[in-house]
Image (cartoon, rainbow, N blue to C red; front, top):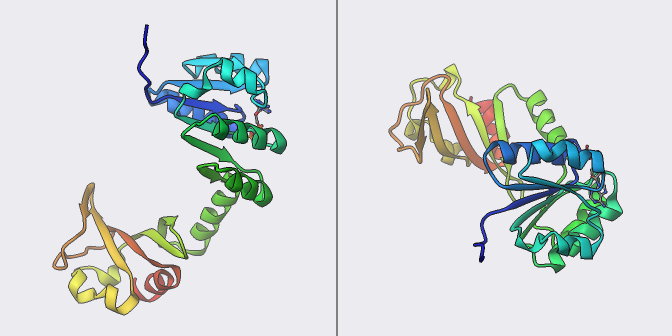
Length: 222
Ligand code: ADP
């Protein structure tokens, strides 16, 4: 019987990182195949995945046998085993997997993965370290996303200083070179707010701009 190709996920390497990716996908109701070279790991994850298999993913034949080609999105979370991670990524891209996301262990690993055509390389310890540092150095920044070329999107709470003022009077774009993308009041999100909208203390502002401009706004504007 012909089976239609659906959005399917596979997670390779069920350590702390891959394990939590797998559990979260499964908890969200997705179909997910859990793979680990370690038999105990594979067994443990049969409760947290649609299927789980014991497999060395550096073995091309074994990968083909489990029909990895049917998976649209594969996460490679082979922690310390950099060589296995690199070889697995190479094989997956060669087999034509559309999205291969890989956890990198260090900067060199990251560079190699980029060259091999990994579609996203994550470096959790490094990324989390940066986030923590941002949170430590500013009590105003709630969250942020790094964009290309030193641009970011940050979430900040409006302070008393700007309470009752409109976007037009604040004139942030002219003064600081930053743009307010959205304002969240209570639980209501206002996307692309009009210039006459009045900001109140504790509104959540989602602001985009160059890092230096955002820092200036955060220090002097709030
Ligand atoms: P984390 O730092 O996220 O906890 P670990 O290094 O602890 O990552 O986990 C990596 C997992 O990847 C381990 O469970 C290990 O058995 C698995 N693994 C290692 N090599 C392979 C391989 N060649 N094929 C499949 N799984 C592998």
